[in-house]
View (cartoon, rainbow, N blue to C red):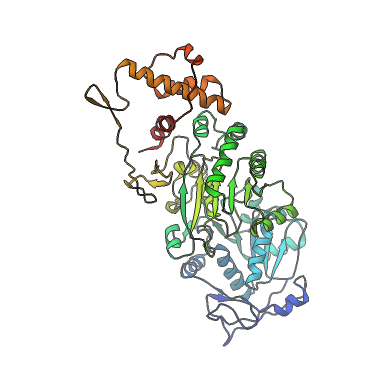
Length: 545
């Protein structure tokens, strides 16, 4: 395979600009396999040219990253937040190597991501091959986009061997996803550059001895207008938080899938997730992150019953159906997209207004990838709304504070998993449910105080903090009232009566027992004080600093 390019003279686009006029080639069809001599395009203030082709002009931090990549031949990982332009860096490197007569291999994790990468390369007129499952296109180009699965399955074919041999540099997208198929690439002895917004997996240190090349922080990119700031709301579902303590942890370090599925698919919880969508996202284009396929289908069905346009999408959704769903979601015909591990990585739809976290995870990687889906800028979009119904924001904190540690070896603890007891330095505003820094004393959303003063009750001329010992009769009345409200709540939700018993014992630890005859009394509808006492007993005690 021979690669050629015209020698750049007065038309040189400069060290950090690239673009080629392939308009004639496009007219004849991009599937042409004949060798093409590329012509350079001059950059302009509008980043275009007379033919309308876009020209890639790197931002300052992208230039610095490219310089660090070429500083030596070591394998390195480039860390950039989602939406910060990792693919643009790849396009520049591909163009630079192609001009030098070298090959470049860009490897994606899933077959479905090949099209997305191809569209971005076409945007900057970079001619390329595509190697993926059923749809392989060889154009005798120096740049190749391939799925790792297809590389593995066709590693013994002549054209794959030739592409691997000719590649001077290999770029791996979503480099934190590592499996045996990648051994083929690392055994070649080529320079490998990994791209990831979450390089947290153990074992990356051995594969990338050059370490991490750090890009700008989330906050820097938000200030520069490259990302959108997030607004966090945490109407955490009490039923989920209570039951998660009983869900075991599996070998991956996350909640056991089957047990979590049973919890999240409870009718009461599906109903509360639906109410959360109606309350906070009724007029927003929204992604709902679900636990598994059955959970996603349940949520989508319930939303449809409420009159919303909703669809579920997951790894078993056929490719053509995915395209149709994405198209309808993009043009606004679908409002709620219920996702199962499909939109956490490699999904680019800037118009999304809101993300609802409807399935908990202990994985920092999954959490960061989820939130990154809604932070891309879009006309008229001032903030990205994050609605957390399961307590993930309390566990993991603000995405704006995330900065990965240095790469970890295989023997070191995986830094992408937290424990059940871990919590971020955050707290929830009792008034508006927004997520606040633990350092804040005043909510920066509603202006209410975040310091809760104990209420007082007046008894025989004395002032006693609420919750301390009062006379026996008054305390009995409070316990009975709470129990009857808890029993009303339990029966409404379809819980057993024992739920009310144990919840009352949890709130009022000093009581010895609850009289059985109370069950025969008139039940009381829960008031605000009932919900506050539950909130105090579980969430405040568990999460506040």
